[in-house]
Length: 114
Image 1 (cartoon, rainbow, N blue to C red):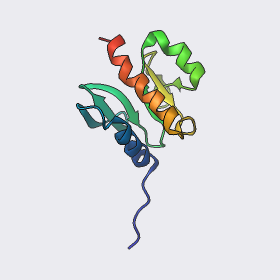
Image 2: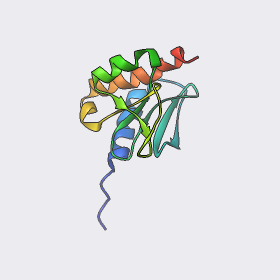
Image 3: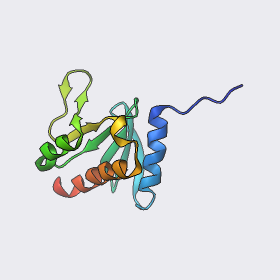
């Protein structure tokens, strides 16, 4: 029996675990069709099925984050999630530094949304 190769979501989830291991209050929850990472009981990011990253954002930074490479997040095919959410395509987060940047965006959004 051959071992199954990890899915794009599983691979990204492990990379997120590695980045979030210095935070004390992190838990994983299945939602939005992916695996969400809650930090201090607030969603920061989620690993999507195709290895894309869903990021919770500060709406005031939304346009700047679009210029950085995020794209508007959608629920399903045609329902935009609004200015508090972006998707970062898997091609944009191949490097550790870029993934860490977007994880920090998600974590920092907690303060702006409180």
